Length: 221
Image (cartoon, rainbow, N blue to C red; front, side, top):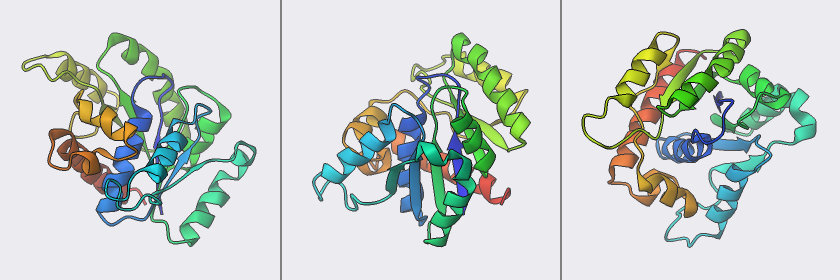
């Protein structure tokens, strides 16, 4: 089983929204997915609740992927619990962490196959990401940046300039994820963006991102 951890020590980077849409894209690609919420805010668990309440016509499999809060008192047994999940047939675990440096986040990095670091193309995010990168490097886990919430304005150079700077310290996931309403609307509906607007540009971005992540993480297993 592969374990993908979304981590960045800053709130607002879009970890949970990406986690939900990646979980659905991976499921549609044939993975058996379990998503675990390690953030006290519980946004991923709330998405799972909305998904279970959605109309069957809107969400074909409201009980999938499995979405659960990771028990705070079992952080020290994270590897053991993930092994147990794998034994039940899960092929992909997605861990959504808090925007903070804490023992739970570090345990999630240590247990991961691959780490994804969502980051917006802003100076503030660039300054904040250094601590995250240092923590991942200390764990020895492979990682990549996901440049998220990029401007849709043509010829806007901010995202490309940020990508160039990030590429000097780590891999850049492909493609860039643009700031599109479909992501937030899908989340509010308890869906992934590839369910909510399967023919939209956001859905194509997420499918490409999952394909990239899948290929990269397979080489690390």
